[in-house]
Length: 160
Image (cartoon, rainbow, N blue to C red; front, top):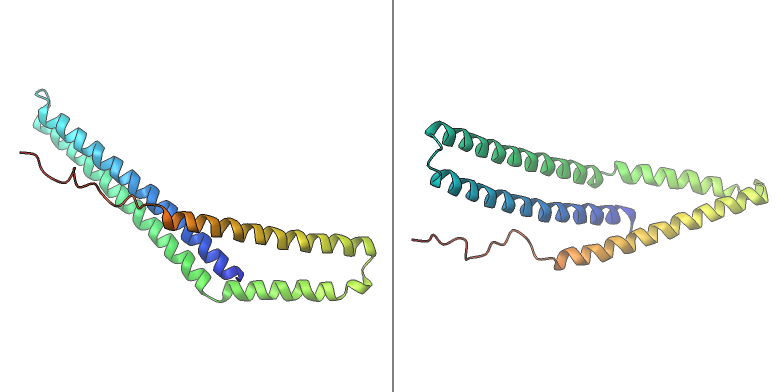
């Protein structure tokens, strides 16, 4: 698997994690709104002006949540477009070519420096493999994770 696919998997993992957390936040916000509405409707001491202010507060919270979600979605779209573009792949290829041309001159390098560069290369490859393993493992977990968007049917029916 090349690095572009690994980064795409990492972005997808992060996006799915965010979607799950965000949907839980929206659910909790919805429950808080229901509690507030029940409290406001049943409280005898709250005036119409007080109800109006609480409804404005609720609408402002909802708008803030919607704006936040829109900004995050735009950010993910930009990041995905950036990695779909070949700019990152070209940059990585150029860096790899420079590194390889440098390693091809290894015969001219002092032995201790050559050993350090070889150790650095093996450490880099090992860390890339570990990161790939971590991403693959967590992608599998996220695929099997139940979505928080599914709502229970018990709360959707109105009680008479």
